[in-house]
Image (cartoon, rainbow, N blue to C red; front, side, top):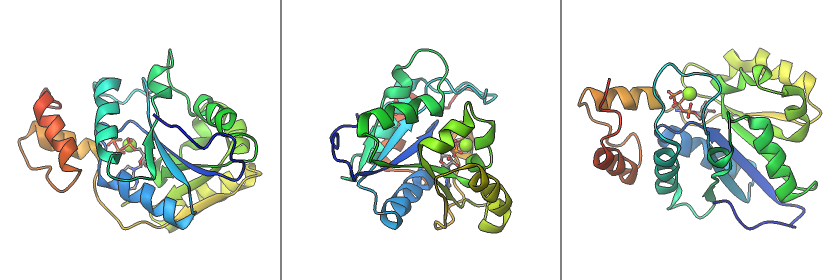
Length: 212
Ligand code: ATP
Ligand code: MG
């Protein structure tokens, strides 16, 4: 659960949204790079409830994704997990989440929504995108296939619509995706060193991703 920080006007909060099915080192490296580069006091991971953009596969239960995210962040004192999207009824929209963070941390807090560059390029399709751009800054992190040059035009478009800053961040390229991890589990190929051992153990214990 996210907690603490209320009433501290100058707090800087990173918000890392995702399906996290499962969470992996690409997510963790990105969040840590953002924390250090932007001097964030905390990065809150927010596993989505029911993703409104149908993903074409059966997403694991919010509970399993919340538990895996909690296991993954447990060793970093600056990382937290929030259950706000999984507790909310209906589809998850980032705008509602950011509004709740704004209410919780106050007008003076600096909110940074962190996305991988693939997600950055989709922000304008998200619900109430213009209001979202008013409510927080964005950090667009590079990801294999989405380097700085590829995302420049999209970032400039966001910047032109936002009174806040849209930053870019280069992170060490980790060609890891949840899709690939799920496929590996299904095909009995190794996932070790792609994600924290605690998360790997949970996947095996619960038999996740075995079904086609
Ligand atoms: P899937 O393959 O199921 O889409 P994913 O690996 O893309 O999973 P998500 O939960 O969709 O993970 O991603 C959450 C956020 O993390 C997104 O903003 C995404 O761009 C970012 N992200 C995911 N993997 C990486 C990575 N390897 N490097 C940088 N950012 C990443
Ligand atoms: Mg993704």
